[in-house]
Image 1 (cartoon, helix red, strand yellow):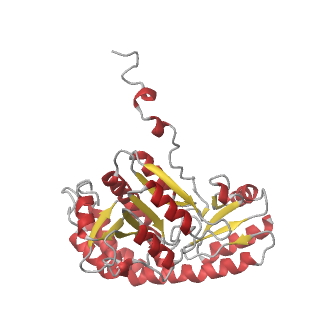
Image 2: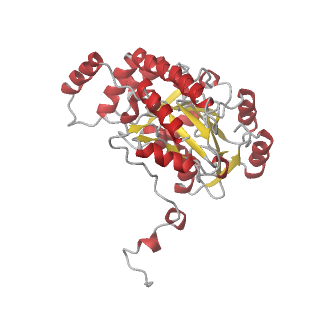
Image 3: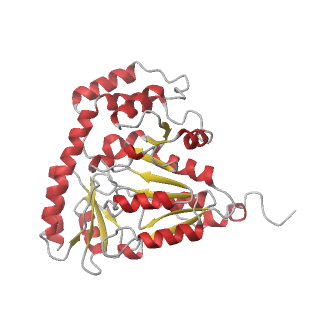
Length: 362
């Protein structure tokens, strides 16, 4: 018997987990919330009444439908998923990333993505005991450094490559032909993460089946259903049938299934909201571009990355918070994001308050 107590967490918890910080969500009570890439619009009353009626008729004493066949069929139609591709549902994209990482883990294996990129790729790699390889983007425009990615794939032979398209937190779309070159050169699986698909016209969904190692991941969070926690992976059956073995039973609850199915049947409502967000993105970009001391980066997402004058990101973030507006401070999160802020596109009224407040800060 060693000297460690049975409840000595510092002994029993893996060192790499102890070294992590928990994912932090800022308190946004009573604030204009422009920090988390959410759709700011709620459902119209008529749709809410249909939803309430559905819930009223739904019992939760039984386990949910484990296959989610109705919901999958709705998603297949709305998202244009090829008929010969399988679909796996997850509790948000995060669970899908975790399932993929768990399935592909092994001694000496790694996951590769780009930096700056979605923070959960690195965190979940650590959870699952995989080495994380982050290849820096080109500093001037956050585009792919293709030679560096190809060299890193050759060196580390990653089991999985994750590429967000558009990228988070930078908002830009990578060059399509360069992404194809990554897919063709990758030694293992390539996951194209299309979380922000509603805000761009580009997608790799139609390319499923062209490459044996390509899968596409999406979420309904950004299109207005963040509270449901629903993501999906689409791709060849050979891959998805294996991933299904790791999906916990009943991971998509009854209320999420019926709510998402209703939303997909009325996706035109969400599409109209998305169109408003895209239009408001132009308004915000135009206004901020005219302000001195700010660099505005191109965005195909529902947020904008901006760079302030040296040392001004944290003060501007703090002043906006004092004015009741919460945005994301990225300065300090990665060297390439020095002096950077990320702003989610809100309603027209919220955006005007934001623009006026930033102008006052400057």
